[in-house]
Image 1: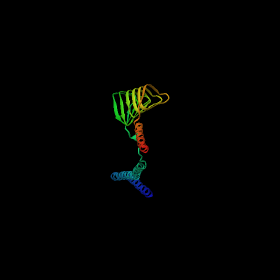
Image 2: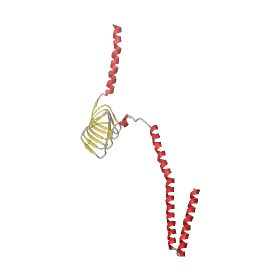
Image 3: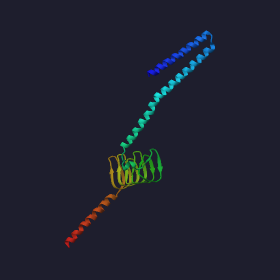
Image 4: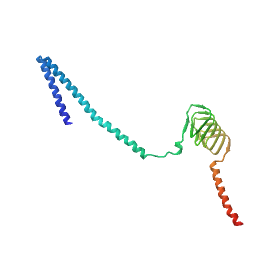
Length: 222
């Protein structure tokens, strides 16, 4: 920096000297020589400012080029260290019926569905859950492994588990393995209990083991 300051001061002193010579030649009457020295001093100033601009770009350009290299390494390290397996509920597709929207027709899909608007029709879901939100309303049949009602449903609900929350209201038929109604929820209609497939499978396994245990007893009595 000291070298740059010394050279800059020397250069500026030379330019001022040229301007003084040009002024003296003008006063002396040598107009041609005055014009030549004035042009030389002007070009000297232009070259000086161009050199200063290149010097500033070189100083700040290094900082801007080095900072992206350092920041690009950080996300790579973070991705390697924060690799986690998402649960199955988060990897399932999720469909949303928006608020203040009306859908007429049947829906058949896989994954989860959230109803914030109004649906006039049947909803059938495989391997997921139907969630009727607080502002949602459905007129039709719901069929899914899990149904959660926090809005208004008029129709039939077929599920393994049915949960009616505080603001939920079901008017119709409930065909489910287990049903829970929280305080504030409302159910008006007919309830038909259906055995869960998991429970029936467990009972079959237990009955087979009992039959196998009875055979040796029959042989011993004989």
